[in-house]
Length: 313
Image (cartoon, rainbow, N blue to C red):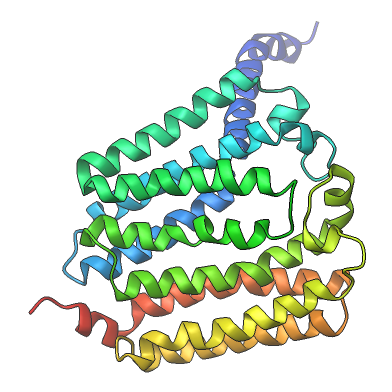
C-alpha cells in the first residue's frame, strides 16, 4: 500500500473527533441563534456604554453585554424546544438540531438553562437584582408568551417586539442601576425597527409559516399588501422616534445625520415593498434593516455631543 494510505488511516480518528466537536458546536450555535446573539450583545453594549459614559470601564460594559447575550441565547434555546414540532414542518428550520434529531430535548434544555442561568447570575452578582430580574422577565416574555402566541394570533409580532427591544435597555440598567433617557430611547427605536424587519422575513417565508400553522400576518388569507403597508407605517414611525435624542439635546449633528440617513433609507425600502410585494423588494428591505440598526447605534456612540452630555461633572 502507498504511504499516504497509512497516513490517512492514522488521521481518521482525530478527523472524526474534530468533525464531531465542530458539528456539536455548530448545533449549539444554531440552538442559541448566534447571529441574533451578536446583535443582542452589541445593542446591550451600546446601552451600557451610554449609561456609563466615556469614563466607563469597557471591560465592565462588555461583561454586562455578554451576560445579556447569554440570557438571550437561553431564551432562543427554549424557543426552539417549544417549537420543535413546528420547525419540523418548515423547510427553513427543518435542519435545526432538534427537528433533525441531531440533538435531544434533554441536551437542549441543559444548554438553554446553563446559558440563561449563567447570564442571570452574572447580572445579579455584578450589576444588581434589577438587571437580573429584567433579564429573566425578557426571557419569559420571549419564550413563554411570544412563542405560544405565534400559533394563536398575528398580534404575536407586537407582543414579541417588547422582549425584542429590551437588550439596549437591559445594558443601560445594568450599568446605571435604573432606566434613563437613552435607555428608553433605544428601547423605542428597536421596538419600531423590528416591524419592517420581521414583516419582510414573514413575507419571504409565508408559505413555510402557513404550512406550519403559524399566524404570521403574510401567511393569513386575505392579507395581500398588509405586510408592505404596515412595514411602511412603522418605518415612518421609526424616523421621529430615532430623532428624539437630538430633539432633547442629548445628541448632536453626527447622530442626527446618521439617524436621518439610515431612517430615510429604511423608509424608501419599506415604501418600495409597500408599492409591490415581491421577493426582490422584501429581501432589499431585510438587508436595509440589518444595516440600519448597527449603523444607528454606532452613530450614537460616535457623537461628540453624546459623550459631552454623559461626561461626569
